Image (cartoon, rainbow, N blue to C red; front, side):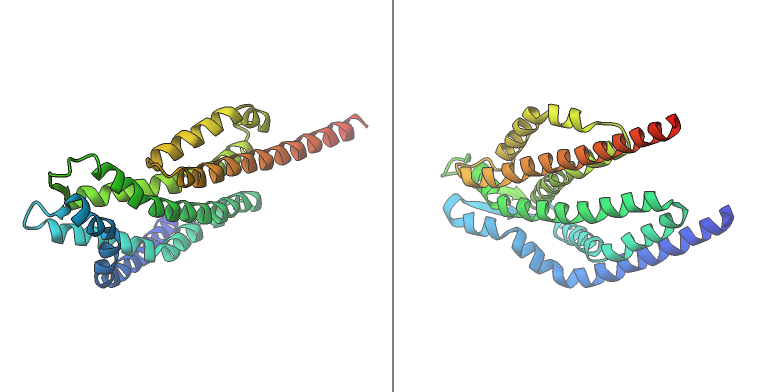
Length: 248
């Protein structure tokens, strides 16, 4: 296939993906009120107890935020389509081994990322409540709607990415950048980092929530180390077999 044909295929697949996002975003416009209601439920619960309220500082702020939320909903809802278009464009030029790596990475990373995002969503009310509690009780806490949405989005995505980190570790091992021995050697730092991240992501007096986040991160790290060890063992065995064959 010539360069021009590749560019035409890229254009066609990009158009299909864009149309999918637009169609999903149109549907997201009608779903957005329910999503925003779920996002602000914790603020509604705090309204009486801690005088916390959502504020739209400009005339167009509510519309701008709704458009932003609608776009995010469209991207998430149409993700199977545009992910397929990306894979369909890239995979024909890959070897069978490269395809196995990519699909293995994808089917491992996506469930972990979604699980991490779900946990991030779970701990969000605890974090919002904690930070709002620092305001004096006789004061009014006014939260900018856009800033609040950005805070929740970053928190959820950060926890999601943290859950995917072990998959990146395995990927780095498979391409020869890091060995299983190096991964296992850093186990103390991994545990410390997991606990610190969990403490920052769940800054509340609820130790259970912190452990519910820290323990899966530690388990995933050692699972990644186990996969890396098996990969290195197989690679070393194959190298020894090749040396023995050449020696004979």
